[in-house]
Structures are given as structure tokens and as C-alpha cells.
Picture 1 (cartoon, rainbow, N blue to C red):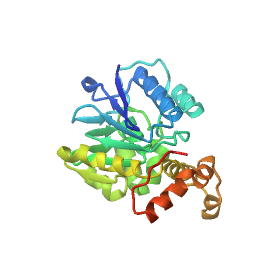
Picture 2: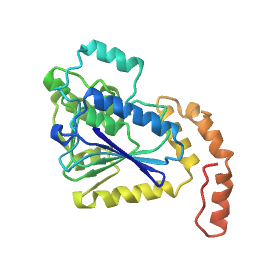
Picture 3: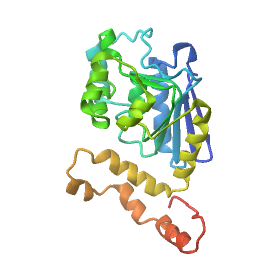
Picture 4: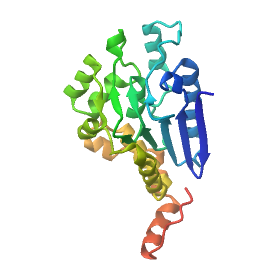
Length: 257
């Protein structure tokens, strides 16, 4: 298996385990990842996901160019346009995902990072979309997402040149939530996980849903957007529990109801 998938205490950890290929994604791994995201969607007991790569060299080096899929670039583009099963543009995933970026995030690796909600990186991590260097283009969301997440000229410059950008620079552009030494990476990620678990799960799902669905809307359209996740959070028992816990000066006990 090229993916380690582990669930403990409301937290799922998804680790790409292909160190011999710098955690690059071949078609078999992509299919495995798609199944994992489907499983996460179906399991409401999972309240947070941590996505990372094995080792300290690479989070994910993108598509495995040694993997011959037999598909032309146009075929691949039509396939992902019709049925996007990865994480970068997946709107059906309501569970928060933290990217633990332990090294290079290239091509599809960076596109997966862009699909996450919180990004924590080691200070040695580097980011790039090098597809143009090999006659490809960033099809898995990079061309449309990066310029929406960081300044347009920085994004276009990265895509046209394939240049690698260090973590501190990407943090300055606003893509990363935190940059820490590699030795502190797990502790930093665990703090973010703990903070998410300390929040009401239905509130977190509602926040993610609205944040994902409304960027292209006007402020008024976004404000009046009614989603099932928002209504569930507003009508939940946890909404009352949160207030009661605050007034009673105790930690809330979330039930997800």
C-alpha cells in the first residue's frame, strides 16, 4: 500500500508512503487517495485530517512521470473536469484538513496543499508548480487556485518558471499558517489538531462549507447562503452546550448533535 491511513480519537492521518519516488503520485496511489477521501466524507466521527508524506525530503513531488497512464493531456483534463476525485477542488469534503508539509511540495503536491484548510510547514519545505518545465500544465487546480490564494503575479511567475519558493516566502504570501523547524513540526501540527477538536464539530463543518462555497459570491450572497451544515450547526445541541459550558466555566462536551 502506498498510503498509510490511520484513524485515532476523531483524527485521521493520511500519509503518502512512496519515499523511493519522493512521495510522487502514480495512478494507483491517486485511486487509493480518492477512496480515502470518500471514506473520510462518509465518516462523521472523523473531525480532523492530517495529510503528509513519509520522511523529511518530500511532502509530495507531484505526479509520478514514470507512471505511463496511456492518457493524453486532453483526456486527463476532461477526466478530472468531469469527476474531480482529488482534494484540491473537492467541495464535498466538509472535514477540516491540515497539511503537514515536511519537504518538497511540487506540482500535484502543491495542489493538494492548496486543497487543505490549514498548512503547517517545516522551514526547509519548498513549493513549486514545475509542470511547464516538462511540457505540462498544472491541471489539478493549480492554474485556477494559486492566483486566488497568493498574489497573482507571484502565482503566475511560479507557474511560468517552475521556480521553487521557500516556506517563509510562501508564508509571507499568505499560503501557510505556520512555519517551524522540522524538529517542531509534529508538535505544531498537534496543537492545531487539538484546537480543532476543542471546537464544536458542526460549527467547524459549517465554517469550512461556507468558506469553500462562497469565495466567488458577493458579500450579500455569501452572507445569505444557507447550507445544510449551517442550519445543522445553528439548531444543534452543541450550540446550547457551548454557551452553558462558557457560563459554567467548564470545558464543553461536544456530541456532534
